[in-house]
Image (cartoon, rainbow, N blue to C red; front, side, top):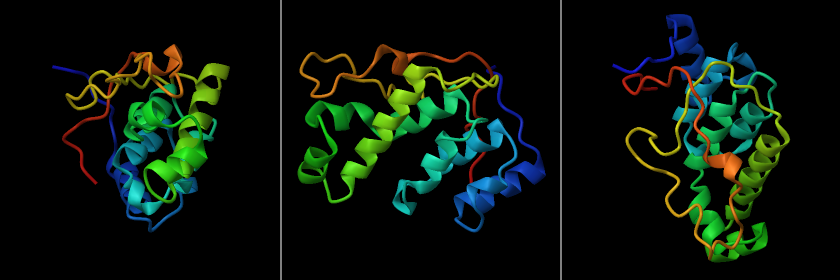
Length: 162
């Protein structure tokens, strides 16, 4: 049986308030809370909260990778080399997602993130391999190998919903 990240009732309540946009990301008190909030965030609620999570010093490498792959990086970068093309090809505002994904790449490659003991595997995100096509030679924007790494440690409990 896999090892899962613990989340107390108080922590769960804080995450719930952030995910429901009833409280700011600043109310989250740990790397684990950031990870659960990022995993449950509806991208339809905008990207600012995800960007705030990703730039906090207590954001784990696992959380940064989770945000990156949940942003459908391989799809974005297969057809687009820049934010303007993303806006034109996909939808108005897609360029903002493109930029967030690029920021995450830069921070991961620069070594901004620490593991914080949180596990994540983009090749097994709830049973789905989100990396599909990441190394395609036709990729308009090549994905750095650092973005496909697996971080060891306990993972998000898939039975915890917000």
